[in-house]
Amino acid sequence: MHTPTAQATAAQAPARYDSVSILLHWATAALVVLQFGSAETWDFFPKAVRHLMIIGHMSFGVILTAVILLRILWRLAPGYSAPAAGTELMERAAKAMHHALYTLIAAEVPLGFLTRWTDNHALSFFGLLIASPFGTFSRATGGFVDEIHDLNAWLIMILVAGHALAALYHHYLLRDDILRRMLPRQAR
Image (cartoon, rainbow, N blue to C red):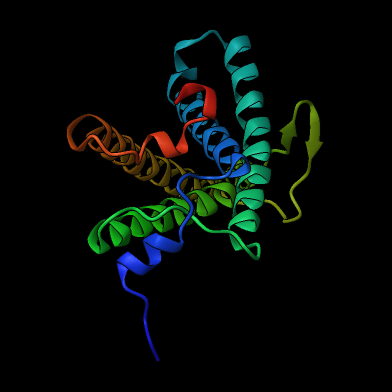
């Protein structure tokens, strides 16, 4: 069986991401940063504002669920092809980063749902309550799930920061088109 070389793969790959991939990428980025920022800051606000921030966090978590599912389905669709990252090492590093981010975000979504449900509260989607399909949980179980959700969020943000720094490194130091390929056409 013949395996294509990095050069052969690069020759077949598109020059930039398609508009749906770009939209889903930036929607994911915005939602992940919004989710992390709200969770890390709501304790600094009065109780009424904190409550609204928590409802917003849950609601945007449901939207993030839909965006991630769309993103995965889009990438798995027949004919989808991502631009080549350059050398074989860069290609592998990019794929490893993307797989890690997808895996952690895909894990964070059900952890978010479970965090609310193991705290024995309904999940709220802009005020529409989604009751737990499970029974009640002990405080220890709720605390454990909360911790895992928090740790996973920090792992995501560390990888997001590394991902952003890598894009900036490519743009400003290597002066290649890695970053521009993910920007909307008007921003290029």
